[in-house]
Length: 175
Image 1 (tube, rainbow, N blue to C red):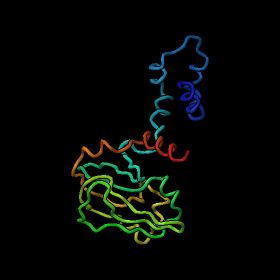
Image 2: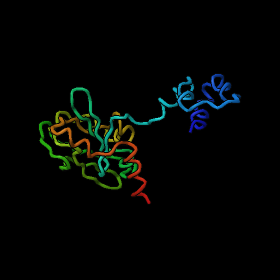
Image 3: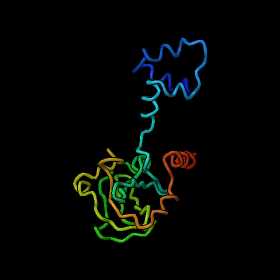
């Protein structure tokens, strides 16, 4: 594992890694991780924000400051749908229970219902999607979010998958 980290940082920080490559006595993994080139490689390893939680229906939620949750669909879901041409989203003020249907996405290939990852109230919808539904495909984790909601029952977050568990889930359904 340390070698993988070392190889990842070689192109950007080769001079810092050379002493590690030519060293005759092995370094402990903790000492290796403290080297500057490893710190950079380790902090950029995750592709998604750590706070994302996923449902088995491919929605995600990110808990924001102030206790609100931003909801969207996963990259896997948007790829399966294809080019999104319409987003049907709920009205602000709509009360949702966990797993309630709150809208739909339509694409050139299919239509898919959207389900609430948590219990709460819709406080904002992404109005940019009305004129540009393709944002869901272009930036599903950033600009293509669907709605923001209150989190009435924070304990429900515990039942959702983190990124690693969601990736395992995706692999299991692809097999």
